[in-house]
Image (cartoon, one colour):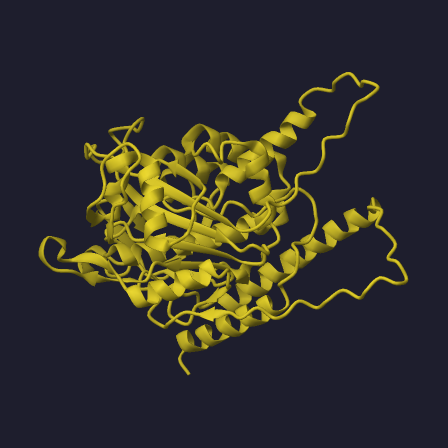
Length: 439
């Protein structure tokens, strides 16, 4: 059996086992979160905004000691948001506010070059992050402020009618209702990458891209600031030079990002959280529904306990083709897309049976790295458990006549076709680099 097929088999078995035992209410714990998932161009985040909410909420509590009144009431804990969540992160190619000596010329338009949809299941046991190729031809929804109603590459919807138009178009494309959305630009990606302290990525073969000035030798690299943005933007330097290859390369970054955020060292560091919050608030445009600390906190709480193997990054099922004016553009693979979104609409967890995509390959040191990650998480969990037992929370004593708790029925995992690419946050991958001689 080839290494990729063996990896696919392990991935499906792991997903089935995890979900089979995971259909329970989310565990209670401290106010840490695994919320910076979404993100694309940035990447950066599945919901970066949630981190901002938690940081400012904690900061506001300790800003200054007030005067205690006789009828003071304790601020209640904010729990996980009820039910499922659909959140869209849009990465804009706008050059507004950027250094003209660093970036290429302003294209004169505002395109949504990154479109990342986050779906959190209603029981908060799994999350799916769908990357929609920027060149994929879709039907534009009728935009709230006019425009739309025709077809073209999806990255034109932001220029057509702003963030609301992008959201409506993705809703029409997927069948999902999307109440939360955010937009980030180049400078925002740079600041977010700096705030997290960089993300370590594995490069299998050298990456050389003169368009984005991305030049990385094979090996491990910790990317922050402009270098992180260049890595996320590179297309010519990875895979086959296509937008689809770029997505799988971005997922190398995103999966590593999630693993870093999952570590207790990152999520319990007040300085790091404040830096993320400041960067997010200063560099993102949020929908009104998301521009609320309680809402951001609630979304974060829904994400924080999802295990890495249940966070799935998937490319929107598509392939390059088309005819006429759309020749060479990315086209949806409708049957596979229908299977993916039918599963999400039914709130089924998904498992991948395909490869990571041509922009990435399996990390040859994946087993050792996974073992180290598991050990680190076990130590963090033990530390958190020890802290929790030091200040136990009173619990109600069950009645002698109480009925035994029912064992939840196993949840069926929707296994996607082999031509749907992606990976989980627990899969260790490396960028499949492309040199100038290969371009």
